[in-house]
Image (cartoon, rainbow, N blue to C red):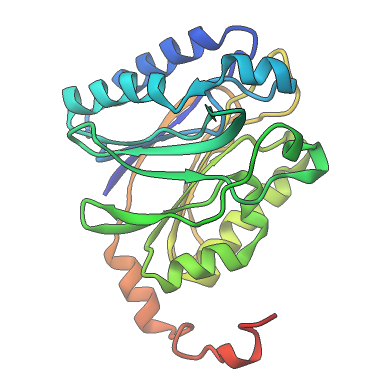
Length: 264
């Protein structure tokens, strides 16, 4: 599976330009020498974090604008897109939502962030989702965590037990916690013997929060590739046979004792 991560620098002052830039970068990713099978971008690329009233005003109604743009690009290039996350509104609420599209441009999945970052007051901006998402992309079982959710190992483990081999993580992770970012991604990959494809927002001159360092880690915990801080397109190939190889070599899942911790 060839994957490309589009590490966007978000312009919170001009949401329309974010859609234009995202579409341009997606087209650039498809012009690489090796065409990606899956493209993912970062968390909240359409708006960034804004005050509640402003966020609601610019949020994508039912994700329709995102779908119009991404769906047509998927059809044109025959590529799967995990559209990072967008601020999407339904009724009077806004949801931090990841939308998944197949090669034909059909929306095949949707995941709403279930764990909101209370430390920064995210619960005042978004309504939380209530279920995990996993599904097949080119017959490969994949799952999604969003940013802060890297801190909840139960999520990744639950997805791994469902057969997930690739965990995609759109994020808007702050520079002050770079060590946590790298450590948690590597830990989730090692303990679940899966690939973790984590796409962070690029450095924004107007903010000191986002800092890039999108990365791919293999099932053995090795960093396959890592971006710098600036806006970038990062591409690599996942050797999915390595997931089966590592899981067979070290039978972590067979050695579990669920009765000790399943009700913790």
